[in-house]
Amino acid sequence: MRRWRVPGPRLLILVVGLGAAAGSEPGPVTCGSVVKLLNVRHNVRLHSHDVRYGSGSGQQSVTGVSAVDDSNSYWRVRGKTSTVCERGTPVKCGRSIRLTHINTGRNLHSHHFTSPLSGNQEVSAFGEDGEGDYLDDWTVLCSGTYWVRDGEVRFKHSSTDMLLSVTGEQYGRPIHGQKEVHGMSYSNQNNNWKVMEGIFMKPSELLKTDSYHAEL
Image 1 (cartoon, one colour):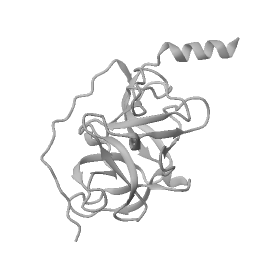
Image 2 (image 1 turned 180 degrees about the vertical axis):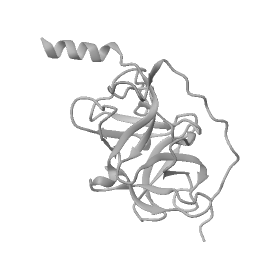
Image 3 (image 1 turned 120 degrees about the vertical axis):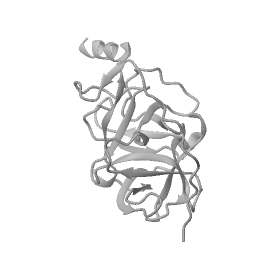
C-alpha cells in the first residue's frame, strides 16, 4: 500500500498585482502573471499541495483537479532557471519558463522517476521559495509568435523532452478523485493546455516595439 506524507497546512499567499483579469480581452501571457492552466482533454486544472509522493522521488505531488475555485491551482509564470524575465514581458513560443506554485513556492519539475499510476515520467513540485534547479525548466510550444491567453499550448520539459500530460488515471486517498499529471514522450490531445483564471501583468513596451517594427 502506498503511503503519502502530508505536512501541515501552509498560509495562502495573496496574489496582488497591476494586471488584467482573465475575463478581459485576450492578449499574450506575460512573465509575472499568475494563472490556472486547464488540461483541455480531461478538463482538470494543474494543481499542487503539501502532499508528497509515497514512491518515486518523494517530492511534492502535482495533480489535476476539476474544481474551478481551488487556490492550490495558481502558478506564477517566470523566466527559466538562473534568469529573470521582467514582469509584463510577453512569453514567446519556444521560450523556456518556470511555473512556480503560488501556495508552496515550489516549481513544476520533472526527472527520470516513474509516475505512480501510469508508469510515465513523474512530474513533481520542487525547490524552496521559487528556487530549484535546471529540471524546473519547460519550453512553451505554441503557434504564432507569442503564447496567447485564448490559445492551446504544450509544455515540453527542457531536459527530458517529455510533454506535460494527463491521461485520466485517478488517485485514491488522501487526494481522492485527483488525476495524475505526468510526462509523455509523444504529442496528442492529452498534453494540450489552456490558460483559464488568473491575474495577468500588462505587456511591456517590448510587444509594442515588435509590432511597430513589423509594420515598417
